Length: 417
Image: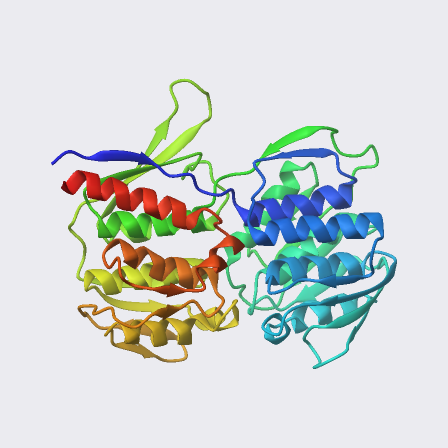
């Protein structure tokens, strides 16, 4: 049996794209952003930043995009003017209180027009004179990133103290890396609780600096899942790197090693600095997996569904914040896996999956959540008749997911002919 080396085109990282878009707006657009994500969230943020720049409307509707809403809430709070910020019903149930409280403590005027601590809000933009602030990041690292990104606009910069352990700390590190790459002075205390961001340089930032956005490791998790289920297929992801990435979700490579997937990083012989990741399943995986997803919650759906398909016992911790995403991902994963015959037990701190043999029959609902659609979508490689409802939700982060999955399916079919 020969192997097949198939190139998979991953989207660019929407997390990195969104940070550069906000920083570019704040700095007066000195950067040339290349390989921006084409995901719905990034396109929405671009449109809303353009709306703010042009002054075409004072109402900002963020649909169900939590990152977009949190970044814009902080930005509008320090942008003179009167604004309203809202979103879809699901977004109005996601937490905003820690960010609102921190901005208010600095003197910003934010009024919740519905339930306190949630969208929608009315904002009277004001540039705070205070330099010091505290924030509770336990519900979302996006609160911290939102504050750090507006730090350069403040007259003395920003010193931000974290009062609790943050969720998804690598995303805070990503924000600090983007700020530093842009030429903003940054520092972090040894205990990683105090973050400092300087002001915009008086001479301005370097004009026309080209920024190339990395490929997305969160999306790569579904390619790894496919490799785990189809060991004969070798998959290459151009533009992805472990060694040079700022993305915390690069731990995908480590996690899926337990599920039988080998990773190799390849340097281009023709273009300096250009790398690819090649993955292939071995067909040999561990019988049980334990992992704490507190720093990489977006990976859990892909990992859990893969474990179910392979008959792997799983004990997954760090799950609390997964209830606060586009859906209640813990409840949704349990509900949809049980449709397939899996046995899932959930406590306040962990999710447990018993070894099982899946029996697809009922359609799988994505519950409006892109990561649920993609995690279960990979199962169609083994069960072609499995129906995924709301397949269009994948455009939130990986618009070409289904076409890339079809390419993997065809490659696997060619190998087994």
